[in-house]
Image (cartoon, rainbow, N blue to C red):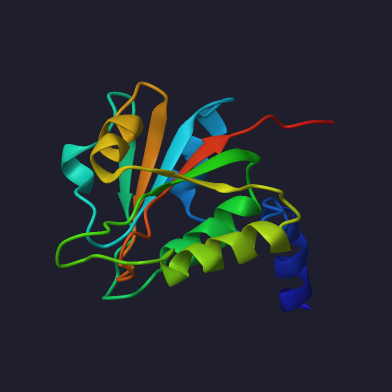
Length: 163
């Protein structure tokens, strides 16, 4: 009897959020974000504290190496907000971290967009142009992950909520 009363009392709160994103601070920031706001999902190597835009907040989710990943954060965000564009940090083609093709994590991002029924292409930005692209007045949030994939940084552009 007591259990059913508790369930009745709590059920409006249990069903309040209809998406998979339950982090209170991230939900608060997203609730204030508007069209064209930028959200960076940063990998574990990204210099988050020195590249925040003037209006951005940093939420550090880096629990342990590899947890969470940028793709795990992307999947949660896709249930909560409309996305109209996505930029990646272009991989290096020379030097110790050189790659000859798209990093494997980019295919994970593409799969997540497809699973969310979004037709979004990844638009790479050269590494040293990526930092100023993030650090704009439209940048509202950086979510720092512990993703160990190279070049897993993903800059999302908030779209428009349609009826």
